[in-house]
Image (cartoon, rainbow, N blue to C red; front, top):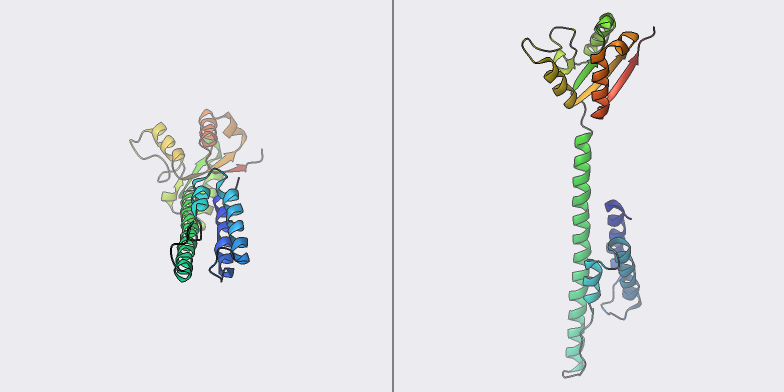
Length: 216
C-alpha cells in the first residue's frame, strides 16, 4: 500500500506529463497515452473501486451527439469546449488530490515533530550512596549550559522536591513530563526499591533514557 508521499509523487507525474497534451482532441495519440496513464495511476493510488476513479470515468472529453442537428462548425466548437472543460476538471482534480495528500503529510510530520521535541528536563535516577558521582554529573551538565531548573535530582537542594511537596506525586509528574532519564547504575542502585521503581516507570512510559554504568 502506498503512503501519502508516494501517492503525491505519482500524481505529480500526471501533472508534469499533461504538458505533452498539446492537441485539444480526444483522439490525439498523446492525449490517449496520458489518459491511460491517469487511469492506471488512479487505480494504483486510489484503488479500482475508488470515488476518484469513478469520477474520472465520467469524463468524456468530447461532445456526445448521436444525431447531427447542427452544422459541422458548431459541432467542432462544441467538441472543443467539451474537451477543454473535462481536461480542466481532471487536471484541477489531480491538483486537489495532491493538496489533500500534502495536508495529510504535513499533519503527520507535525505530530512526529512534537514527539521529537528536545527534552527540557533531565531526571537523574540514583542511589543515595552514589552522591559524589551524581554531583560531578550535575556539574558536567551545568558546564554545557543546563540550568538547575532543567535538572531534577532528589538528593540536592534546588534540584529536587520542594519543601512541603508530595514526594511520590512529584516523582510521577517528573517522569510523565518531557524528561530525559539518566540512570546511575551501580550496586547501590539495584539494591534501592525506589530506584528500581523509577526505572520500571521510565520503561513503561517509554521515556528517553541514558544508562551510566558505575564500576564496582
